[in-house]
Length: 191
Image (cartoon, rainbow, N blue to C red; front, top):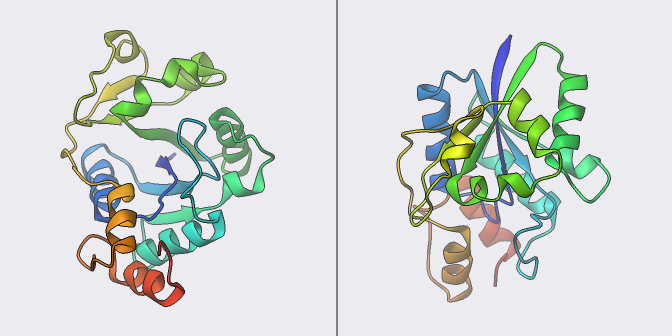
């Protein structure tokens, strides 16, 4: 069985914090691969600054293209909207029978996990790997199920900050992968 961590996100844009977390999860949480699942729209976030999903997918692909055990997938862009994690998991399980899927999520999303569609089914069938976020405490009830708080490094970086800095004309070459940085500049994104 191939162990895959699914890292759901807007990745608007993907940055080194996302990549560091994915690297930690693969190396320290016994995952064979990490797949970045580009979400069309997170129902808990505003969409006003959200780039087209195809552009975000392209940036994740650029960030991971040289890494054998990391990749961008567009499964949620192929499924009908609204996008529910349970539907994504069902679609992946039907396509990849020899794979075991875990979900990688931040403590901020873990606090809202009980609001997700088919929450009980998700948490009973899939391991939830939670990474810490400043100011968020994990409910002990969640941790009694198939979820656990990892010792992943606390990454104090947000895509919203990067978008703001780019809009303000600041250079961000060390915060995002070089290919992504060049793509953003070439396409004049976030201006």
